[in-house]
Length: 171
View (cartoon, rainbow, N blue to C red):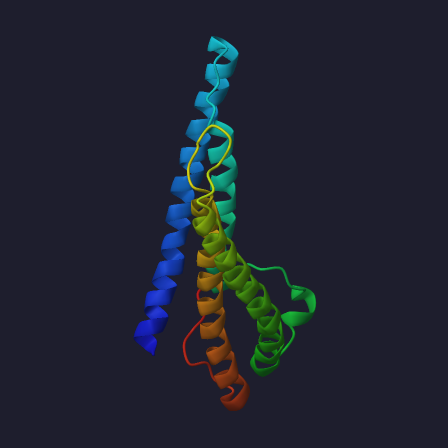
């Protein structure tokens, strides 16, 4: 179990570097597009598409990382005054909503990917690549989020019943 937790944590931590590379690439792409448009009056046809796709990719891949580091929004004013057991109970209730969102990403995103693969739909603007590639980020992000949430639920359930944590949280 601990090996699985370490692997999932490592994957979610590596997503920070993947997202950083994507955003850096997007910045270079947008810089090139602006220079081409304003100085040479010839912008790329695919620059806007890629910047939108990279933004979505970054957002979906970040879910597991943010959950791992407890970066999601919560009311710390109340939460910080709770005991570890109460914090874990609140986190278990919150996990229900996280699972709903993650499963929606996995199911609806997966259905959309399969539908677009069947249609062989191609982007109609500039880039002209298969649309399912764009939508693949949705179920992948949902899977990363759901697995991290599952790990947190196991730890929180153990804390509720014993008062101790199975493993320490990432900070």
